Length: 145
Figure (tube, rainbow, N blue to C red):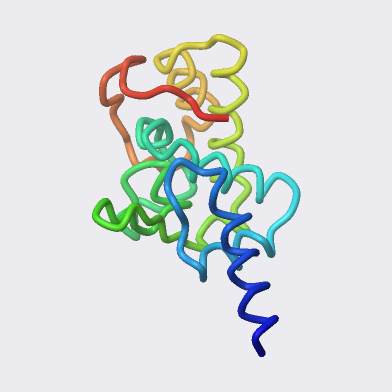
C-alpha cells in the first residue's frame, strides 16, 4: 500500500508540473487515459485556457451553455487553489479538437487571433456557434507550449 501511494504521488507530480496550472488528480488520470490528437488538444487547453477562451466552438455546445472552445475542455479553474478540472465533452468531438489544434498550429505559424477567428468562422459557417468574441484581440495572452 505504501508503494501505491508513492507511485500515485509521483504520477500526479509528473503529470501536472509541466502545466501553468495544476490539474486535479481525477483530471490527471483522465488526461493520462487519452492519446493522439485528443490528448494533444486537452494538453493545449490546459496550458492555454485564456487563448481558447477567445474562439468559438461549432459543435452545438452552446445549448449546454458553453461560451467558447475553452469550455469544451475545461470544466472549472479554481484560482484560489490554482487547479483546473477537465470535462470529458471533447473526447469524442472532432470539432472541439479541430478548433483547439487549428488555433495551436496557426498561432505557431504566425497568424493573428483575428485571422484565425475569421478562418474558423468561415470553415464552420453552417454549424451552430458559441459566437465567442475576441477578448483583447491579440494582446490577451501568450501561448505556452
